[in-house]
Image 1 (cartoon, one colour):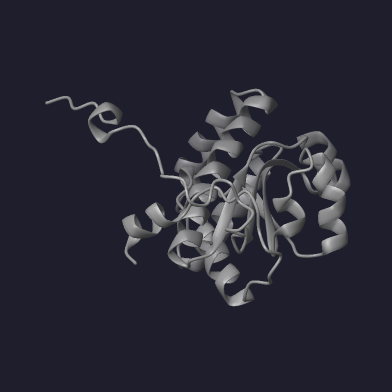
Image 2 (image 1 turned 180 degrees about the vertical axis):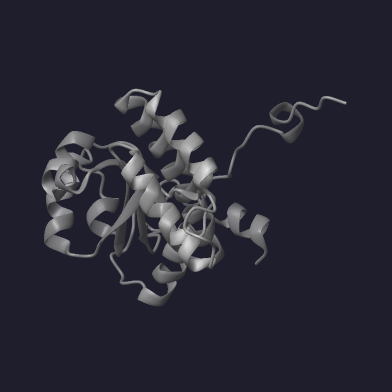
Length: 210
């Protein structure tokens, strides 16, 4: 299927069978998320992959007992950096200059301006910037899952602080933002499985300025 056919095929699955997905398909989804664009190429987030059923059972009440949490094959938790610091920017650009075989100070003017722009923000504002970048990768992962014919459920409905505590994310400088459950749709028990996909018409969604 092409991309539009894949996006029409997918929906936010409400019940999953518990069947295990091939890790190769999940790796493609993760690689797509890794390749997603981010502001200044910083990629200020991590993706936590969960397959342990006991851990899923601990996460389920934090996610308001949504059944997909334990019925999924994999959980992908998108966690943004809790801060974007000068040191973290330097680390990113040290990798960029090294992999592009550039002089160490080739991008100094750019990174100095970038660090100054982030320094002018509060820590919470810097986290919000990181969270928005995580959402870009999250969206790319959803599209990649569709093209791989992997069922998925995007989730914001969970207690972020409790999940952060359970997974020890604070110690890693991370805060959870979204969850993507990956698995196989259970059409026999999913009330949404056979309903028509409904979206706003394109002529209402798009505003043309000619």
